[in-house]
Length: 77
View 1 (cartoon, rainbow, N blue to C red):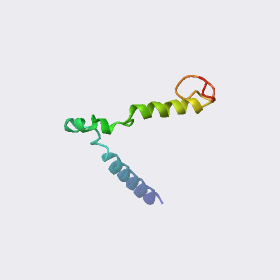
View 2: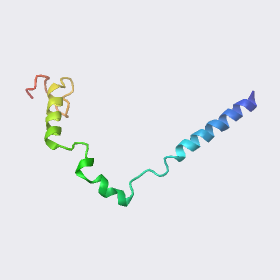
View 3: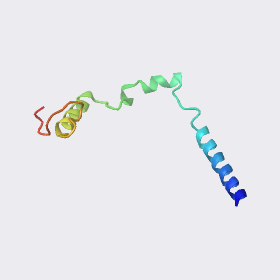
View 4: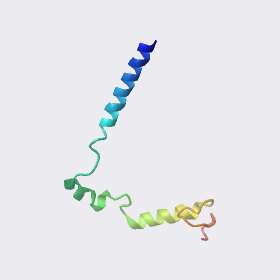
């Protein structure tokens, strides 16, 4: 029984080490930064649409205020 537990533990540690080893090369290289800085890579590509979506969100969020301040869900904040 102990041999089986030791084998399972060794296999589990080997699996964890191989999964964590895949995260060793995360990050942005200097030659990739120009691609990430382009306007098309932004999460809110159109600032007018983003502002409209944010307004609708905080106007309808009644319990917390949505965008960081209190207010009712009626849109009168």
